[in-house]
Image 1 (tube, rainbow, N blue to C red):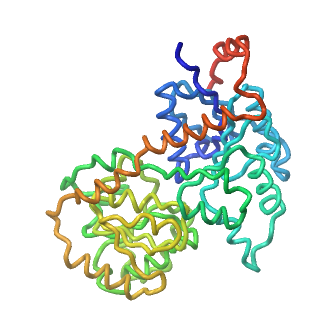
Image 2: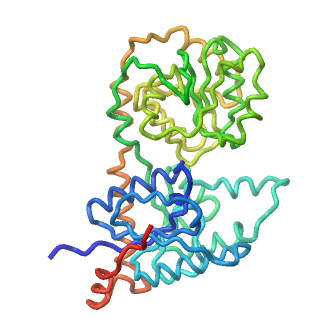
Image 3: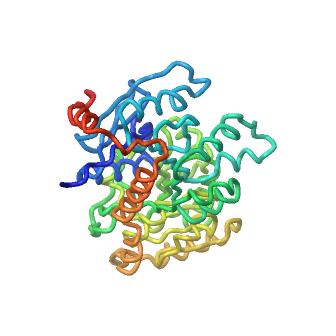
Length: 396
């Protein structure tokens, strides 16, 4: 008799958005793959009925509901675990850094980095009782903590040594669309504009630690100013402010891209002369792998988890030496040949970060938690199993 699927309730707010970004992409991919295999019965829980829910598979059961008391984080502290318990989940996955203190269901928490607490160390950043007291206590009560790099694991352990035995490193994966991409000679079109080549590509948004302004200065300071600069990841409301910072004579060479479909990203990476990723700290750095997976060089510094991503296509530069960035861009633009194909070695290196490996490791954490659950969520009765079979998906 085949083993029944694990019943997993997940905080799916990263999928209950206009456009799925960042960690939401990894959650989508993991849920899709496990739903297809039948390994997990998914219950996606969120709180924004006014926004679309990006459902990875039709078998997923969805519940989007609101709770009064946003000031006290009532939805994630009470309604989320209560709903997981009501659905008789084996595991509740708090997949977005926050976690409930009350855990009637064995709980797994994803803590991708410690950025909120690093900024809290700055004297001009107001402290938060919820962030500094409630969430660390919730982490201590959790059955397991998943993080996405060895660097993040070290940061978490340094800040909360008591979590050491609960930490599991599960690196993110690069989608097959990047590993299987093939070069063509069609122009890249963003909106209604044909992107003039050569072009540099920045992926990362406007968060100060991502250093968009550093990337822009590295572009316009030297010979890079003769190339086009494409910026992805900005909210539309930030476009005018960013454009105003660029020298007027170069503004026609700056393209601030709208949201770009994930299927179009491999070509955008591949046609770029180089990807600029000058972040000061990230939990993982998926664009660094995606760029190398299609054979494009990517410029970044050896900081945080980025030190783990130095593949054949990496150009590692000092974090505080702008002229080194300018010289590297100039060299790449002078040496670039439009006939160069994808770097097979870089592609092979990037393939070690697969979604299959990410999926297997996360499933292993779920099964370990479920098998060792102190709250008895796995030992269900036959009648409870029948109720599960009869439960129908919530209309979407």
